[in-house]
Length: 271
Ligand SMILES: Nc1ncnc2c1ncn2[C@@H]1O[C@H](COP(=O)(O)OP(=O)(O)OP(=O)(O)O)[C@@H](O)[C@H]1O
Image (cartoon, protein in one colour):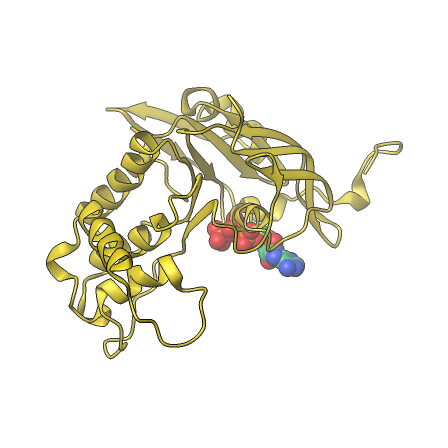
């Protein structure tokens, strides 16, 4: 199987601060891949590398066997949930339409084909009923469904999701994550899902990249979400409890203070 995302010897650092290094990773079609970690550990920066918005310090990254490029149609991107202003002059279907031809300048005269495609996308995310409602009048969950539809417009090989459940209530969290998982399975897209909290997607996640303190671990949730692994990553005792199919992590320190500083690297280590 050809991986959708490949990183080799990847390293990202800002100044003396290394977010991650020696990252070798393949993400496969149809894989639901979660990126976890505390504030400032580099989750969004990881997405930016895949979006071609952030260069690696060293190593390589490719998408579908090609170097990453900005604005690639291979990628669908669902940004963090931010509400539209109530008077935003866009209807739900206009927002989805931007995913199809938003790269074009000037007034859009939607063809029959474009309209059909918009209808199909609205249907796919269960948003047909509010197709003509101005986006600013919709609930956070309804707006987020439209962003999912917009991100799916180009039938992307990989769907990058940056905390797409933030500020959604439990009901809408379940709806949006089920929708993203559906895309993963029915269209065989890879999903890279950045989140602080694994539990809302625990039933869907195949593998996890856990970033903390300038280090990382990759594996299944069962392999990574353990007392031993997280205590090592945080350099402090952390208790991981698995209960009723959910994972509770107790005693998390402020990991952003534990970054590995290259100034303290051992002599002879290669950077
Ligand atoms: N262009 C940049 N220049 C310098 N530092 C940066 C740059 N981009 C990100 N950083 C720093 O890198 C660290 C990781 O940022 P990033 O946004 O990737 O973290 P995150 O894990 O997504 O955090 P959060 O959970 O708070 O959203 C932060 O300390 C941030 O300030």
